[in-house]
Image 1 (tube, rainbow, N blue to C red):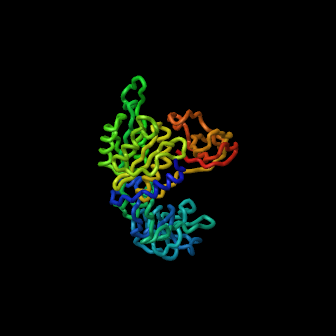
Image 2: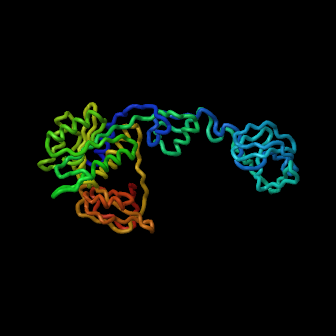
Image 3: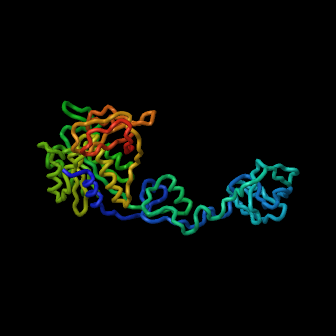
Length: 391
């Protein structure tokens, strides 16, 4: 059994980048940029009005000004602003030559149909200068950026309609166990529905990788081996849930070895999730995850997700906040690092929830996050500020 930190380091050090590809901007969400994105133009590309108002010379603010043209957004000014002149201008429109400020329409009056007078005390320039946001050739999104909606806007604004992104890992998912039936079936005596495969598929897809659910393999060498071989042929990573502990029908580690998978570890000092297996060969990565759904969920978040992101050349950092415990936490067994589900109270404290163990997946549905209790720690006092890994 190895410490969790060693397991994570082993997993991440084993990852090899999968390469890159061009994708259409409409398909780029959640992908990882494989190259820097540079701007092909200044932004703004011209001196732009920040307000609806009148573009004029600051030196003429005390005078009555002649309105020489109206400039809507998208229109190129045709006249230069001379002494005691101005142009009516809309937000986002190009500021005409000669003007050095835009007075807000709210601070003006019109003595005649063709003139305007500034009636405020002072005015800001209200002009967005050409290139003040971004210069031509400037890196606007660095390599390694995980593309979110705001990044899509930046890609579009600099004309990057086909960004170069890291290839997504293809992840094959299979569950083992004679006790398992599919969700649409009513379990018979001593049976349960297969939740792990669907949970893992959702976790894989939510982070931008590609998942394929291969279904349920019965607890025989032949059934698991056949399904495993099929998954290996079609994927970069295979996740097997169940069959990794010490029981008579926990066949997964042996089958991985039979398929020339080098097992780098088989037990991790973590709760939940002690019987976790990781192995590699020349062309495939394999995780054997525990059969209980909370264990599977937690080990995916802590171990598998960072690994899949590393295949995409992305340094994953989970969303974490620090908050005080609203109640003391105690435990008797301290050999393993333990992760506990918690909720954030209305008073800004953390409380543990009614949690019956690694089969109690319903508990995670009301949890806001997980807190880590380090190996050797028996008690954390109320009020102690601890990191919360949000889920």
